[in-house]
Each structure stands twice: as C-alpha cells, then as structure tokens.
Length: 269
Length: 269
Image (tube, rainbow over all chains, first blue to last red; front, side, top):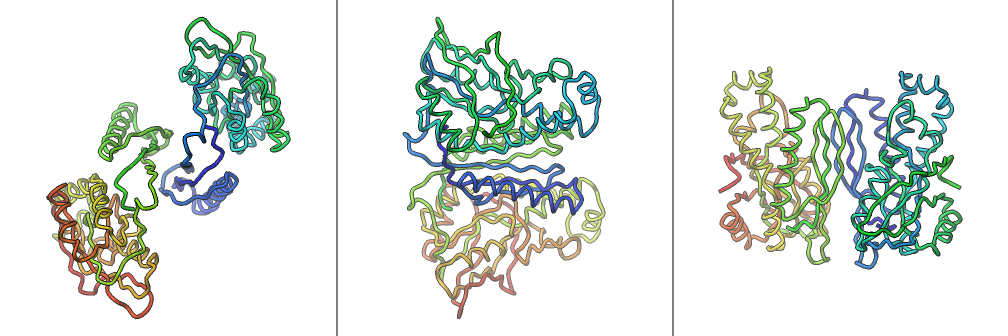
C-alpha cells in the first residue's frame, strides 16, 4: 500500500456468448478500450493476459510492482491521535442496485418512488457520481498516503468500511487502540434505501464497495496538507471520518453510535 | 522463460450459478483444492485473488517471479545446428473433444466408432494421457532448459506448435534460420480424427494445446543429457522433434512435408 507506481499489468477478458455478434464486437472493444485507457492513466501498459468465451462478459486484471522494502507502507503503525481520512464516498453497491431496479422498473424501485425515498432523477445522479467514483484511480491518493507516511492504510472494497477497519485493527502492532469512525460520507440518499427497501448495512459499515477509496491514518498535523494537496494538485475530494482513541486492552474497530451521515454529491472538486 | 521458481500466485475463481447448491459446493471445493495442490507442487502458495459468481465455473491464476537479469532466458538466440525438443505430446484439444463427443454420444463420436478411427477404450485412454499431460507442470523441464542454456524456448499453447514456432522465428536476433519440425509426437490416434471427423489442423501444427509442454532449442551436444536428466531425475518423457537449418535470408518456421507422426502413450517414464 502506498506505492503509486504500477510496473506492468495482465488482463483477463471474457467475451460474452450471450450477446449477438454486433453487441459482442462493440461491447468487447469498448471494454478493452476503457481498460487500456485506465492502464495508461495508471502509468502502465497491458503486457499480456488471457481471453476466454463465457456466457457473461468479464474484464479484470492483475497489476504488479516491484519495490524496495522502504518503498511501501506497512499498515500496522496506527497510533492514538491518528486521524482517519477516506478518499471516496460509500454507497456504490446501492447506487448500482438502484439503477438496475430502475431499468427493470421492479417492485423495489416502485416502492422507493412511492415512499419518496428517491426520485427517478436521484437514481441517475447517484449512479453518475458512483461511476465517477468507481472510475477514479487511487493512484494520486496512494502517492500522498506514502508521502505523508500514513501509519495504516487500506482500500475499501468487498468487506465494507467497518470490515476493512476491523482488518486494520487486527493488523496493528500496538495494543489498546480504538479505530473509531464518527462520520460516514455516502452517495446522496443511498442510506435511505436500507430503512424501507433493502438492507445493505451501509450505515453499519458492511455494504460492499466496488473500486472504493483509500482509508488512510494520518498524523493530525498532516491532515490539512494531505487534503489540500489532493484537492489542489489533483482536484480530488476526501473526508475526515474518524480518529484513533485509547482503549484499555486489545484493538477494536467501531462506528460511533451518533455517527454523522453526510452526502457526497461529487468525488471531484 | 527458463525460471523454475514461482514467488507468489493470485487466483481467479468463478463459482458457477448454473450448478445446484450441492454441486457448486463440492466442485468449487475440489477446484480450489487442485489449484492449491498444484501451487504447492510449484513451490508457491496462493496469496490472494478474486472470486466472482458466473454461469460457468472458471479457475485460473497469475504467477509472479522477480528475477535478476541473468536468471532468465531470452528466447532469441537460436543457432544453426540447434536441436528442438518437446516435453509434452500434442493433441490435448482433440482428446478433450473426443471425450465430450463420447459423453454426448453425438454424431461425430458415432462416426468415429463406425469408421474404426477410435474405440470407446481409445477415447478413455487418450483422455487419461491428456489429463496427465495437462496436469504436469513445466517446472522441472524449465529448470533444465535454464541449466542447459537453451537458445530459445516457449510453451506450446493456444497457437499450436507451428504458431509458437513462428513466434520464435520472428523473435530471433540471427537471420537465415529455418526452424524445422520433422517429428510430431501426438496422443495416440488423435491425428486420425481430422481426416474424417473434424479438422483440428493437428498435423499442420495449429491445433491449440491446453497446458502444453516446452519446446526448447538445445545445442546438439546437450540433448542427450537434457533428456536423460529429465527422465532419470523426474521421470518425464521428452521428444526430439526438429532442428535449426541454414536458410538464404529471413527466418522461417516449417513442418517437413514428410513429417513423422509418432504416438505418445504416456508423458511419464
């Protein structure tokens, strides 16, 4: 974690058998184009990989970097007083589901409309921000996390933010730390879904994210500079979401009972 | 090519949605077990990866090794007089298709029986050898290819043996080389299929292989030692299949018109 360089990358591609020839041609080409564009943005190139036929289209890859021992962060050095910063809002899983419900015009979507939880425009707006978020690399943030010598850092993906925070709590070399989240930046209205429509455990911290941001532990004195540099240099937002507090014994990851949910209407400044 | 060490490995796994719960549980578990066993055999361990849901089951991975510049072979140093050695027979694609035709008892299989091209037992036997072949790592052969300082080497997979030989011809730094195959070791009776049932271009050199062997160029003086060491130390067969001859201009990969097709009834001694 904390290396912003990618040496090379392999691609795994499944060409869909469930598409007709025209769909398959156009969609596969665009998938590869997007993948190559992002690799270029990451400063690397696709040097090989594997293609298969499969009912569903799939694209993915493996990025590799060889670094010296002092060129990467070991995420076990959190300390009391550290401030926790998050570089992308939460809620991508909900945004993508909402969009799918809308495209199917299913009961969940109809209920959400009827209850006034979201409007049709809301769904589009949340989805747009989610796409921007998922398409944004963690490269710039990773460079700064490294520069400011973060004591612990992880990306937020399938385990949800609390799941990843629990992993960090376990990984610490110090004992007696409470890794505490007191603010949850989420995609607008995404939290309202789980009250009445479907429980994603977003506010409990367990909603899975796709291509989530970095959750980085910084010294309090560095937080302003980190956020400022990320904004001014790269135009990217970040949020202070918590802190590390003292605890009698053992390490624990928690979300405060009075956690403040805030809405992120963009991931770029 | 030529490094027999794997530093670490990531796994990609698709759990099948088209299987019922019991099938999915058993088959996915066995797939992972086989993958882990083979990783262990290769002297490495699975350190992470990605799982997805998908109609079909998929398993694969990416193996990484970091080596110094003098620890791997650059496959562009073939020379006139080099002998070409192959470490697995050809025909895996045909063996797998035959087995599938038999399990469906389809027209192709019925025709093959009727014409006396294969018997039901043949299909099982070829398939068994193919499975042994596909399950055999190239690790031991790669170590020896490196030890005997092969001038060029490639594995034989999706392009077929001639396709891969053409890649080697293009890659050479010397000019005026004919990379010539005069012997084709194939799984027993697999060549007979394409005459009457379905054209895989096996004897033309373009039948795709799954987990194929290494095709290595060796100095003539080293061939006996290479083959002997592979047999005695590891119990693995290999075949001399061709040579590098002089050519007026340009490099070319060829299969001799009078190529000799021989049957491999095992991949182990």
